[in-house]
Length: 122
Image (cartoon, rainbow, N blue to C red; front, side, top):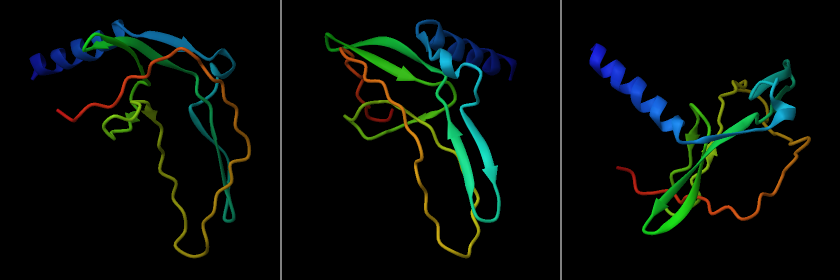
């Protein structure tokens, strides 16, 4: 049992040793997901990305950037960009209607990045 645990620790550690961390400084002190308010009529959730890991991967002579975030999933549609997938479960009542509004978004376009495509599951 100790050997398996040690192998898992070594694998996880070595995976992130070769990736560079890109920090988003304005979100460094914020939670990834944070509930701002909740009640019988509404729930407000805030998402603030504090950074991500990026590593260069070479496949068949082409270099790609693989972007990941520790302990988060990723999309798995083969050929599509392999990007982190952030999900959380929010409980809602059985009665009534459900709707959501995105109140505010901010984006930054990063050029000259060749995103690693999703591969077939092993």
